[in-house]
Image (cartoon, rainbow over all chains, first blue to last red; front, side, top):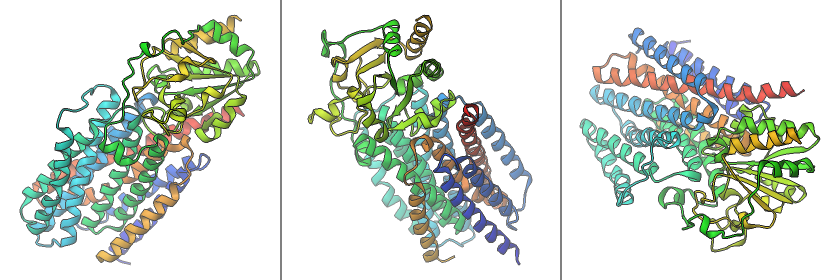
Length: 458
Length: 96
């Protein structure tokens, strides 16, 4: 068996490990093993690649691998669970950036050796553009998630964005026709950089999970098209697996918002003009920690609905304390989680897992909605648009038709919120003035701790 | 590998990817994303060849940076996914 056969056989085994790994990641029981299988596949792929006879210098490779491993390990082990969306965005960007550089390097080398084909040129053009979008798009998403980037655009942004998308087509054609001119390649990368920035800058709030999922898919697509540049089957297979699964997840997120992917990307989120306090008049009933504690003491079933506000206030551990306290007095406590609650797919689940709350107590929207009618108290912690009944009742609302958690069907709803300011959709929420709703104006963490303290006293 | 075979692999893998991920519970959305993201760091093997072939300063430099970035993506991605998933698993044991 030749060296090349060993490499190809190794790649085949890697591809199988990736497929089994992804399958495993889809079920709670098998997920840890799935992740390990994926890592094993990657390790094997790197190992057999090092057998490649084209590789002449190993010192630089060892250095780069060591630097990357150290940085990756530190980031992964130090990150707080609340910062997980940023880290996922960052890793995404690095993957996309790496694909751009690999495609560029291989393309330049092929042209220098006069070994380039139309396939290589086309694939390099596509990778340069998509990879560049992934890199800068992820960096902007990273800044926005971190909260350090407040920029949300400028007049004429959509025009410039369309231009950077359209200019990619002639640039790609020029690159394929004149491969020896490297300028076209770098111009394509630049166009991708601009589109990545301009495509992500206007997006915020509840649209963020969609964008994170989409960038994840794009990093897979970039790896796959890099495979066409290198003529490497493993890159094609692994990249398209990730690209396809990322698109499925993106679609799930879009459905949860009742918006199409194109709407999320190319039209600003529809926003109402609610100013906050004025919309509600005297209809709001405010409450306190002691009052909520009294309600909870006589409750049989409590549903907790967390939102981005819980993440901001880092209230997940306080929420666990509340759950433990209530369970100790025989109250059934479960969690209802909207698919786009938070800033990335599954954000709330990760935070609650960090606080050691059993995932079997976390219910998806479809599972929890029929149970609100037999729920005594629902506590909404830092969520707004995803519990707005206007989506169901008001056909003129900007969020009309968006699937929501029917918290208003429970006997009493306690909404913990710092103020009456509108959520991301910028509309007023009729839930706040409903007869069965109580507003608890406080920081999510402080409010929950207050309730727990009152329960201890009572 | 001919272009047609490459395209065949591409199309089949896309369908397989969509099948594998349908109906994943929301609890696993984040680990699934970070785990699959680590797999997309497979571009690392291309980077290794680019960095190691000593073709020109430009291609070696691009390869070197690409190896570093892709390794961060791969190592960080699998580790952080493992960390998240062990939070799920650890809790089960505590409860029983």
